[in-house]
Image (tube, rainbow, N blue to C red):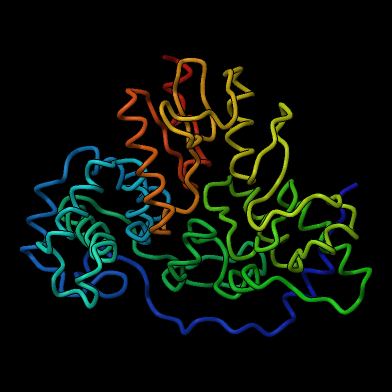
Length: 354
């Protein structure tokens, strides 16, 4: 029987926590300034971005609006990088040539300018002919505190998904909990492992993304992160979670329903989705003419990547290189984001019916 973490959660919620100073991070349709700082984004910049815009970009933004409401521009740059590479590259080229965003504090950093363009440019484009609700007051699904979704910081949105947890609980999940009692410590690490259905990496609190999980799984994982201690290797071994040879620095090692080893809970979700629909798939195939590997290969030759860290410039560059390899080889590549996990049928469904 699974251990009930209720008493440990009470302990965690009683601990003082330092939260960011509250500010409004939302993008309200009728507020030109939007979520943070426009960094001088102007009409000329907007004209250049809109010259690259198309219906595919609009559809992508509409999907984020339906999930994130007034916070939707924050995940837009990552979504464009994975879903709409032509637009992503076109905007980055404008930034490299220093044609847009030249009032930005970091105008000589194309990645920063491109991110600004895909947030505020998308915001300005959509607010002309689309509507979305202003931020609302929610009840935290962990501690029941009332909070405005507008005050949830961008990093909280990227890591934990559409606003569902108050800022205090997000910080608690990022920090984990310390224990003086050894019995409670071992129990807590087992609860964390059960909550994520796998072996927690040693830096799980900082790197895990649960953004795309369904609400029930997100809630379960969130509680596990809040009550869970930092999973140092000796602790994992004492708790009987890992053996002597296991030493990953990042990822969440677990097994999918078909027995395939997965390096994260997100990979398990994708693998289980494929297996449940009898879609034959192999793990870590190499790209043609390269030693680089994808996450999955389907029987029809489609490569699939789960891209959980598109906010990291180096990681994003590696994913772009894989996209180029696939393009040069003439193979289809599907890149999944954390936001896709809640409805994989939307992205992968055509592969079933093809």
